Length: 159
Image (cartoon, rainbow, N blue to C red; front, top):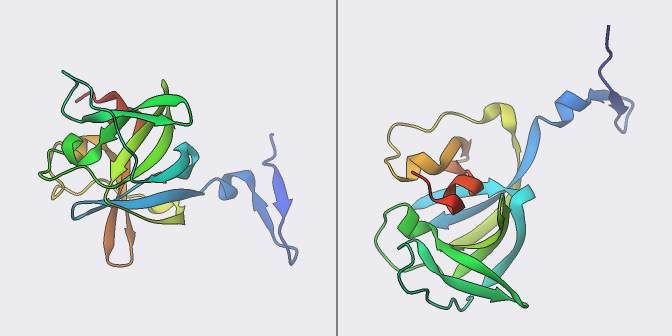
């Protein structure tokens, strides 16, 4: 029989490693009228008003290349990836993904929140493609439906 590792919390209560893993932190942001999030473990930093360099013949979702202190990375416009009209947002979230780092252009950066992973729900049918393709589920936070974005899929662009 194997035992589950436990830790003692202040006040003497014990929690198992499994219970500790049932929560995670997410970075919440908006693109158009959608509230979205990515796992905070992917976030490296947030940038205000980055200046991307256009890339001729690049996919429409590639807003350009971003030079961050000598490190050049792709700038991905989530609005275009989700087939929404309008310009790329004025903020970027620099994220780590399977093949390096990328800057995700968003409209606003709202908060970093702790969420209960057991409360992640399936993506509602009301969320249309292509946005639906990039979401792993949703969290209901207050009055908002917050779509959890798969960073590797979003940056890889496969659909």
